[in-house]
Length: 346
Ligand code: UD1
Ligand code: UDP
Image (cartoon, rainbow, N blue to C red; front, side, top):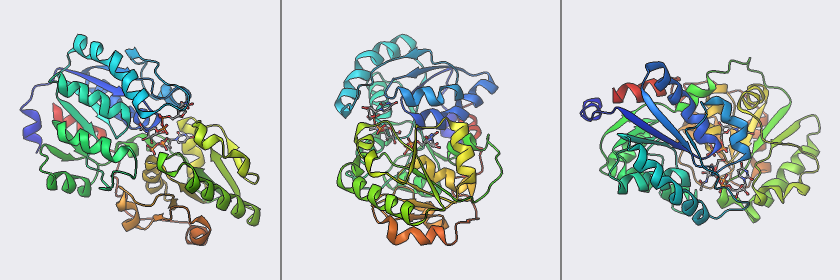
């Protein structure tokens, strides 16, 4: 209800982000704030380091830049690192709203601190659910906790809004996903070349599941030698240590966002456990084998461009390889999510 949103007068906004997808998905929201001349400041928590460098040009330089990342950090390391520095920033800035995006540890920690300091929280991409706290871990818990304390809930889809309503959460607006606004900035011609894009990084896949996925994609790459399997590999040591399995795969460093969009526009299809990449597949008319055992994004399965395969890549490979093209209505919106979000506040 837009009127409920507007009953609260907002003059200053503080935005926090810590990881690659938060930066990508907040970039059009930040642009929209700039266009409208609304006063805001940003805090980069430093949860990511190299991946921040890859996408930092999408947004203005942060007003606060923390540096908390450690190699193979635990969730508690991230929480403790952010908490010790963010409280003072929040107290000094005393914004009318803290805006967060998604379900990372940066999101839940900064939102909790705002809640304790009685500063309203606005949550972009609210209402995604698997209702399984182990998958994705810890993201499902993070986003459920944020929903309990958020004052404003920007839900990307009707399903997300319905889930929030069922949990008795109010102040919901359906917006579409801001990642569609972000990727719409890159208009590359769409083709289905002999290339397959792979991204994998989810914590719950570490160990045996990820090893099986790597073995299967490597076997597929060996068998289908006319196809190039391209894997911009996440820097997480738990992913990197499996690199030797990938003898027949082109493993590259993580890509900057324009390069990633360029690649996505030309690949035949995608194999991924990423949330954002699934949503972008809808915008680029690509099919995606989703390496997860459950999903908070069933819209893609219903629309027919996504298939939940977990570690069974060989079994489902032909579903995408035989007829890679997908066209249909993008369930994640048409690229005006950021405008809807900002218009709902002012
Ligand atoms: C985090 C988010 C996840 C999101 C992902 C996006 C949480 C709990 N998880 O997971 O929801 O999908 O970001 O990519 O917030 N590392 C580097 N350089 C970097 C980034 C990471 O070396 O720039 C390595 C470090 O060893 C780090 C590890 O990766 O300790 C894990 O990073 P972390 O942010 O804890 O988890 P992600 O898997 O990136
Ligand atoms: N991405 C990128 N370069 C890469 C891999 C991913 O720019 O090498 C982008 C991708 O297009 C999407 C976002 O990063 O917008 C997804 O981030 P990630 O998969 O790390 O996290 P998730 O979406 O699963 O939270």
